[in-house]
Length: 110
Image (cartoon, rainbow, N blue to C red; front, side, top):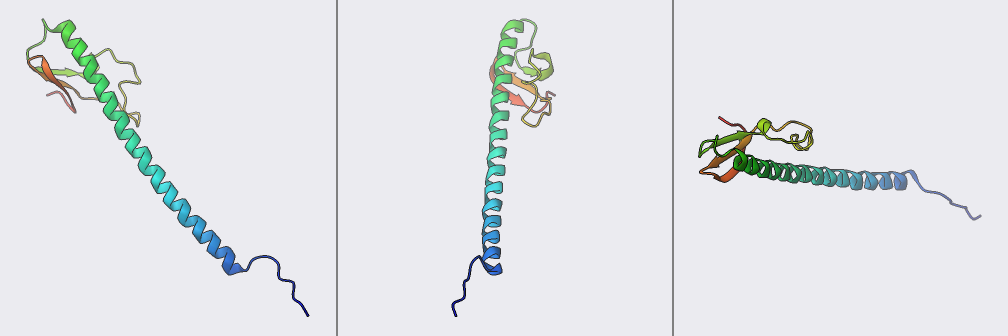
């Protein structure tokens, strides 16, 4: 008598499910890391834009500004999108400068 075996055993199905779970976990962690790297790059780019605006602001107001100091983000004419980081939090720092050169974003103007 010939047995007609069709389908999968429970062990085979469990093995497939475990393999799919492992692949899914690796994919999710990889995607999460890529998202975080993208947020860091986006924030760095926005800080570069803020520095560019600060340079323009300095050129327009250099007669009233000191040779060295800090220009706060709130005094720049930035759009709402430019003033927030990748998570939607506002940039609260500023751009420090020395002798009208060496413009750098800083987390706070003190």
